[in-house]
Image (cartoon, rainbow, N blue to C red; front, side, top):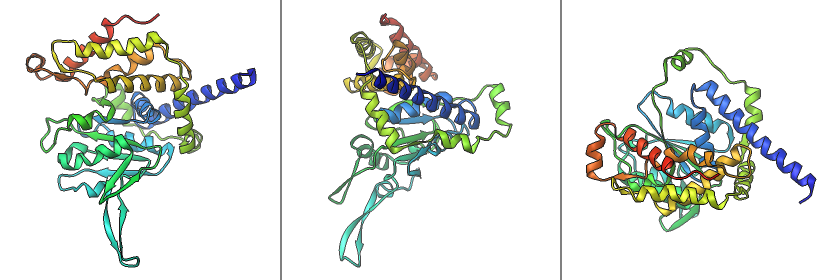
Length: 327
């Protein structure tokens, strides 16, 4: 590789980092305290996965997802999930064309590059399952017809805490399709005071920070070039294996999770303007990537009491700290 090519490559990485930081800051100005959430959305987009936002109503879950989509020059659809929905309301359905005298497939709202699945756990499992094939296989099958979804494809789902009335817990198979589950909590006093101020993003700044389909697909190709040392790979594997060897956990992280962990760490390194993964890239995403993939046994659930997520958070911190950090 020539020096000129290396210089261009370095400039590309710096441009990626500047764009990412600009998007995070701009959305953070509009939705106070959302910078970290935006980073997980970007990692999900670059690593060809999806993200789930969970929190009580009123924490701006939908607003964060909509603001994020506004920075992507891609078709965007919002699906409001309700108890009376049918799977065809998402995927589309077969309809008879009077002109051609044939049955045709009419696309549903899932045929967009960015899909906001709002309040996903307000709809029954039959409808939730309609997302499974779309999220994993990037396609829809209906009436004997299979159609590919547009690329890139990202689902940003929101859900209310399952303890609330009128919610349906997501099945483990569907939960595993989400790379991250991010818990939103109430803002502190300082941030809540800032929310009362009118904060608007500069339109000219937003215009310089948008990403189109070609740029996103190029970032995915760059992600594949990010170097991961054998020690970092072992670090990821050891963390995932630790979740399977703990007596309090009935089911730990699967080998598929290990692969997603690896890809997400590479994406995080790229978004930080690096072509190599460091331990911090792994530690930074560990909790959001693992918290919905660990199933505790009955004794551990009783021990956790009402603070189940805090209990799981302490366990994940223990797994990460118990594994020797690569030098």
